[in-house]
Image (cartoon, rainbow, N blue to C red):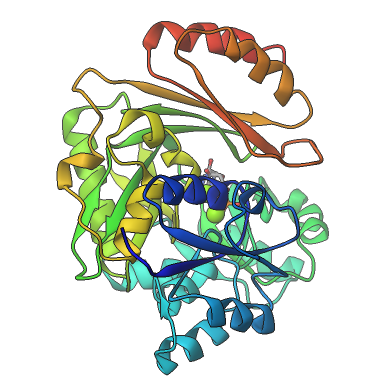
Amino acid sequence: MDSRIVGILGGGQLGRMLVEAAHRLNLRTIILAAPKSPAKQINALHAHIDGSFSDPKAILKLAEECDVLTVEIEHVDTKVLEELEASSKVEVQPSWKTIRTIQDKYVQKSHLASNGIATAESLSVESNTSAHLEDIGRKFGYPYMLKSRTLAYDGRGNYVVSGPESISDALEVLKDRLLYAEKWASFTKELAVMVVRRKDGMCISYPTVETVHEENICKLVYAPAAVSALIQGKARMLAEKAVGSLWGAGVFGVEMFLLEDGELIINELAPRPHNSGHYTIEACPTSQYEAHLRAILDLPLHPHSTSLATPSTHAIMLNLLGPSYDIVARKALEVKGATVHLYGKDEAKKARKMGHITKLSIRFNRLLMQQTQIS
Ligand code: ATP
Ligand code: MG
Ligand code: MG
């Protein structure tokens, strides 16, 4: 299909599913991650690189072996990616500029605002002091969301400041981190759209889905979202506009809030495949993982290949979190047509994403919901 070698920074579940998609098209990948990471476990074609995606030396080593570098996580060293992109030794997709803009959530918010894209109003936290956070409380009202600008995932890095009395706890939890504050978004639903950005900047979106978070972590995804066709269309247009403002090729996850007045604002972007797009493996002709590979390698992608397989296709995706994941996964094996994905992670720590289940029918939804009660 293509003889170029794709280097992937990071080897978690998203990397693992990228490798699965690459295998089917006979595309070659090399992983930079810790030894025995989920993505390495299923790819014996190459000697992979042991190390961290935030270590410049390890990234340079990976670059020596590859033609195109891409990421499955945004918390990478972008300085070395900038140097590599300038040297033309290796292609970096999406561009380091996109990854750097996204990896600092406050820079990301400012970028979106300056491109006329609606987001929750944000303020930079200049000093991690009670006086400053009280000042923000007077401006935003309570509750407001305090967020780490960098290295945030699965809600680790967020703190809901419910009133002046919770400021000292917030500072205790997020001490030493670079912070910013966001106005509270009173949303009725959380929506997400995966967008494929081609090398020429053209964007193709997947259907609008609903994500359900519990304790800041994504638990369920419903595809398509149970909102009007108008809102589904508006969400896709907003997502395409946001991704259109960035640089380089790949798939992007766009998380949004649907507000009480029907308006949509962006929560955050991810420059890579995304949890809300796992369902595309079973529900769409081309999955988000394959679409990412096709985009970064500039291979063709029919615009309808990102639609649901049929107009009546519905999917539900359930994340398997923490120690009880195996019990739910085993139950799902008994269910007709359920697809179980396990990531090969060693330690099933509390709230850790260990796998997921996708099912393409409404009837199963209720059954699956009942089964998750045991977890
Ligand atoms: P991930 O990268 O895993 O999606 P994260 O750590 O980057 O998560 P966010 O997406 O910023 O965290 O926030 C996690 C969840 O917290 C959101 O999905 C939403 O439920 C809630 N949340 C975030 N920002 C706000 C806000 N301004 N107002 C209300 N709720 C919010
Ligand atoms: Mg995030
Ligand atoms: Mg998020």
